[in-house]
Image (cartoon, rainbow, N blue to C red; front, side, top):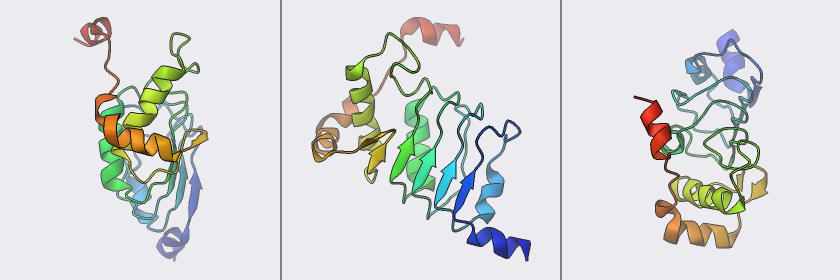
Length: 156
């Protein structure tokens, strides 16, 4: 009976659930459309199960620093995704994470995300415009945010 109830769940808010280390259990929520995982200390090892109906995902204020791997994973496991928010993560370059970032950095990030996730209608707090979508097709692949050399050296 419980398993049947899980398959009917459409929305799940696991914000500030510091005990969330594995998201594998979400696979039993086969009809899930909205998932909120804000403030969970989730990092680059984030692995979502395949959620074919998920159209809204928020990962705000986590510890995600690597954008490309995350986007490739999301493209594979959440093909219906239309709304994504990554605000408050180092992977989302804006004033929330660094005073050194400006609107140009954020716009390049948007082009790269839209290049990877072509079905998005909203990214963070803004609707995706037709101009952005066209620009992402042309230049999005070249907008990858690269870590500075000193940040890469610290990892070794």
